[in-house]
Image (cartoon, rainbow, N blue to C red; front, top):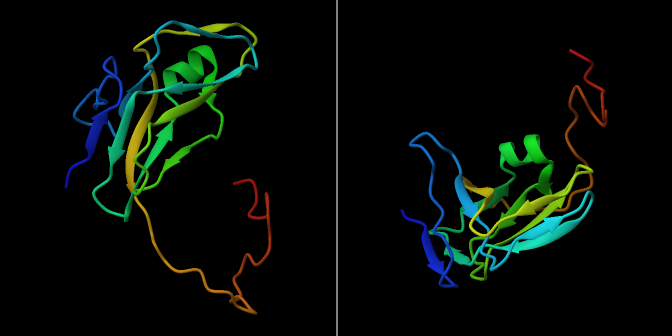
Length: 146
């Protein structure tokens, strides 16, 4: 299997894994000029690429880069972006500056990472009853502190 990647803009950078053991491929900001985000400000940053996943049983998931998040507070607006196997449009990354200090995203900067993961395509079936479990309907914190 292979992931097909198409450049939609001349200055787009093809994502790749930084090391042999990297789970994610770095995505790059395909912008012509820097974008400065004040504290709490958000932006949609284009990557200039589109992909074709080889199977409907795979999805591309966009995660924050830990260095940007920890050092500069730059996270994703939707926590994790989901790219469906049949989407062929440009991958864009919604980012937010979670700190009070401004941060400037530079052209070609690594802004997120894309991980290809399996997706279960089980059918959803409406029912009148669910099976009983030890936890039942216990929600947040119901399993204890440890």
